[in-house]
Length: 404
Image (cartoon, rainbow, N blue to C red):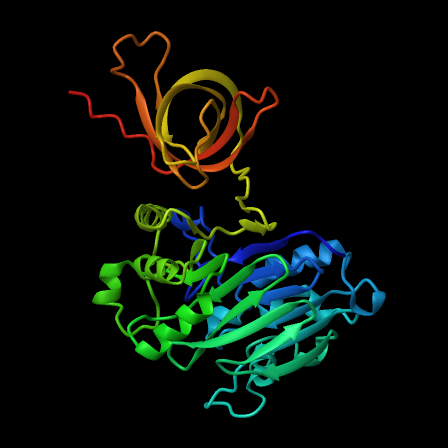
């Protein structure tokens, strides 16, 4: 199946270990896995963290439609593994398409000095070895090929050119660049800045890319102190690379398992002040390159029952062009987690809004409730004069003061 765009979908965005804590669910808790499909229909998978399971369920539901392998209904994909730490491979046993005979997968990564030849095959098979998993690798019915590559290697997969570079991470790590007929994407996670050779590698790899997906696990303060030498980076380094390499869009990735959603919000807000075209990776988020623009879509959340209400609120924030606004908006739906607003202004995705709710009979405003919210969805309404804006509340309502 051909298409006139390149699409990137985030299935796992967390680093180090998966997390399900309540205060991290908004960005997602699965570890690294990103899918890219090209205009010609080629499919690439970056890393095999726990997000791979959800991608596998999605591909299984598609029943292989749109693939080209041997003209049948199978799935064919090129799996680009950055390195062999658990958070990048632990989804392998739970990827449904590996166990279906009609599918075909091509694996790429480097030869580890700890494992020697056939490192990639060894790592894959070890994920299903006794006593760590109840079924062995022989149950993987899909066809598999393995290619060991190193930093600086280049090859073509049909219409897409693939290039690699070594990154600075314990036991080694590869960054990948994919130049497709419509757009270029660089996947450079698990990298610590400060080593001249690796810094130069990354800047060359990222030069002029439409999208740079970059490790932003820590704050700049953590990176300079308690997390120094751990092999990761921060939003500030991502901004520097994006500027110096003339990247069009920066995506902060590999969120720390101890980083709450509010912490990631803060990283994103700080990064956007330095480099406006910055995004924070969310599970289910997609980026579409169509040759004219870069379109970002965030997943719509259906958490919690929404109540069909209609009242007004005072909303303030910034538009897509960075212009401050304040307006009275109509609130159509509301739940514990968020709301659906009708605005004449068009706020930017992942930007913060202030929503002030006041009851109709409150003339003084003493009982007003002020909430912070982040924009998850925005599209023109049918009348074209207003925008439908879906928001998540990002802090709880302030508790009532104790009565005297």
